[in-house]
Image 1 (cartoon, rainbow, N blue to C red):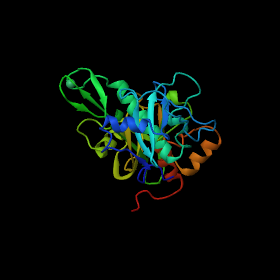
Image 2 (cartoon, protein in one colour):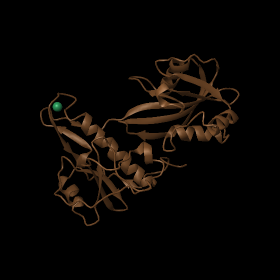
Image 3 (cartoon, helix red, strand yellow):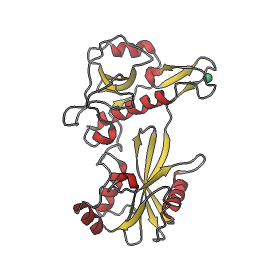
Image 4 (cartoon, rainbow, N blue to C red):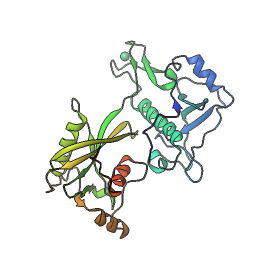
Length: 289
Ligand SMILES: [Zn+2]
């Protein structure tokens, strides 16, 4: 799967979006499309969940509510939080089925909607702030500061031991599902330091080699997942039950057998966790250059 590794087809029009007239002109374009979201960032798709359902804007442009997501093949794409009911989905549910450009649209719309919901006030002075830049910034009239959507880095790591077994863990509320370990990067910490710390905290395993794998936006509400493979130098697991309920090492055969028997489940195909696990299951050496 090649998602999120090549240039996006979505043109985020960063140099133009400061002009509200320019954005409003795009809104009125004959071919403009509008993705409606619920206040929780869900949207509608076709029945199969393979395409976003977008409509033509028909109300007046409102710079405070309507977000210009970008241009796709020259077509202006907007988003608005205006859905209240109906069969809706989020990226976790249908992200693996959408065309890559629509995945980018949904991820951007979800992320920016969450940011406006969480930070309506100026984080510097607490004053009210107004939406600018077609929805991708806010300006505080009280202190004059501009604010931009925030992204929180998180690490997600497929830990393999010297025998090429994969470490998978689960939470009690996940049911049968297990996944690779993950955690947030703390203030003042590198991604690599976070990986060593999280794996030590969660399962008390030490690591040697780390290899960057790829990243994925995960706007729930505003993460960027940084994926790595990590080589373990110890195998004894001591689970921190505040973080996980269980964790274990699996050979490829053991994992396949457990999946087939229905004893285990894996993360959905839209997640970078799934891509990390698939890469390991295919037997490719992630540490080979
Ligand atoms: Zn302010």
